[in-house]
Length: 128
Image (tube, rainbow, N blue to C red; front, top):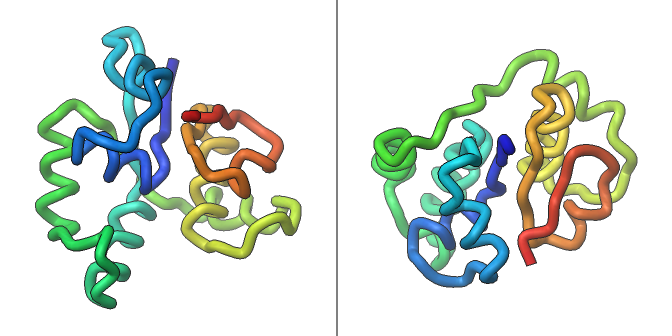
């Protein structure tokens, strides 16, 4: 299975804490391909510069470490940006909305523990 981890799951997986047993099993399953979005790196960079405590890390270093650990990057394309306009107005977070759009356009399962994200239609699975 192709799994696009949302930003919080990426951070929790990197920290080795906060993941449910189900999330840990899916992330550690060698049959699954793991993906991260450029939007997550962008979110980390912005929130780190704002001094948000859970985002105290270097976004560039984090991106490099994800790639070194076998994650594949999903860049943001115009098709992804346009797909945001077709999403129902369930959640206003632009980072989450682009992740939902990327998952739909790329046919990758978005993996999230956020109830607001899980309310969207499409290829989304709960990490709880």
